[in-house]
Image (cartoon, rainbow, N blue to C red; front, side, top):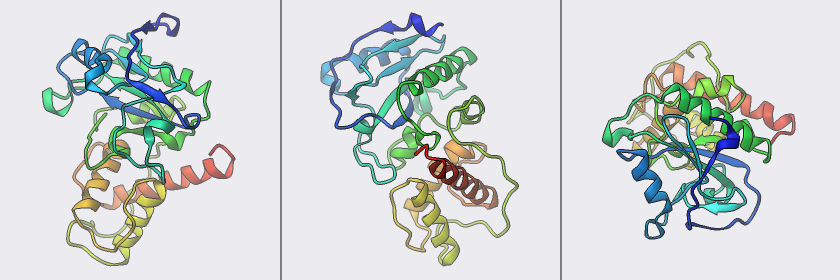
Length: 250
């Protein structure tokens, strides 16, 4: 589907932004059908919306003008920002999600998402490090768009961060572990953007954050255990984000 063929399906669920968007948040709809999801995103009583919804066949629906604040992220946090709705453009991607039969995203749908992301970024200053999943900004509540979303393919087309390092040395870190290694892991996750401050204790909250990181950057193993590959991925993504900052993109 060409971007010129975007289907207007206005939603009343929006309000004013406080600043131009500099973040892009991707979701899955998590409902049985795209029709049900579109109806909910447009229902005044639902009080939810997004700027766009992308169907499995590649059709793109425009619900809220990009200049307005859509209601898609809910309670969320990324790098000090607690009003992610105001800072972001939200894209809902039709998929039943973990509750209704999570499945791979069709090629036509992903091609439409990539084209849409590219188009959005032509109008707004959105760094690669701020192209995120709902599970990144709300890891305690959300899993979407989940481990089947092709973040690597998106990054290979120029949108988002990705790197495939060799696994790092050292033993796995998991619930119950304590010490400098846990502190450094938590500090790295916080520096990337996740909320909790480092404590040096690997608790349930830390495992939740690690699972959110893995859903985005290590989807082949979403278990909340910080093994060598997960830690190596984190260090690599932090370096890429730092390069982006130094070059003036952020």
